[in-house]
Length: 54
Image 1 (cartoon, rainbow, N blue to C red):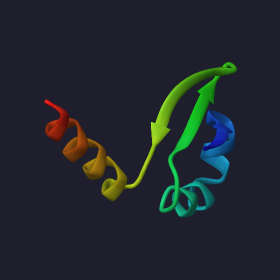
Image 2 (cartoon, rainbow, N blue to C red; image 1 turned 60 degrees about the vertical axis):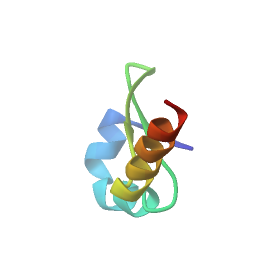
Image 3 (cartoon, helix red, strand yellow; image 1 turned 45 degrees about the vertical axis):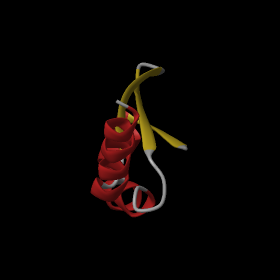
């Protein structure tokens, strides 16, 4: 998983969105994990897997 600061994300959004097509990206704010960005396809796969486990 790639890691970007929130400031870097704002400067390099296009690059980050290209990366999330392959793998989630972790955003940090003040050196702490803040958000994870992932493709809609990855998100849907996670939701389906969780539903199967219930």
